[in-house]
Image 1: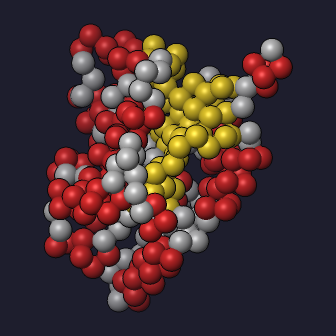
Image 2: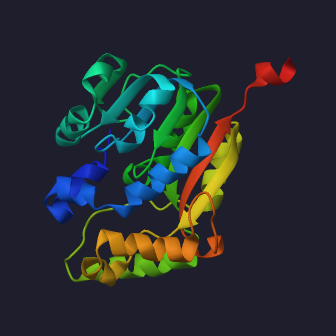
Length: 253
């Protein structure tokens, strides 16, 4: 079996060195947190799983609204950071698991909310990964997913920039390239209905080193608004999507 790609957090450490500092300044996490909070407002869950959870920000934000929470990541450093953020009185309700998604022995149809952001492009077989994500959802459950649409014009610009960096020896990390039409086809096949979508950009290419996380966040919000009040969505190549899995038993009733 081919070796899995390094985790997203391992890539972060490679390029940025200090993982903790990067996460504290990461506007991308803030956007995903806003989308999750807005789209799940008023909901309660039985069991939430946050895959490639990083520092646990997204999953832990739902602790008041779920009975149990599983945080999964390949990086022991990230899981240690996440563990340190769990309130003492809530430790018994949180399970931390160091594992690869495709190798983890997770029970099917056991999670009424599956969170998977920043991971799909980092697996070798993204279609298989999506099918496993869908299989983890209970009927009627939800999947919060992030993907960069490879069909988008801005994605082609970013890809060209990446090829230039690889040619100069500055970037060698491989990414799976997933078209938005592919993702929607997989969702249809797995009975996943799209409920919400927010598009923006998260790559600033050669400008990235000159802009702070706060500045990037202001630019993105200025151009694309927020998940609650989105605008100029056609310009964004990075998508945060909330799916709901069909519940055939409920439909028949």
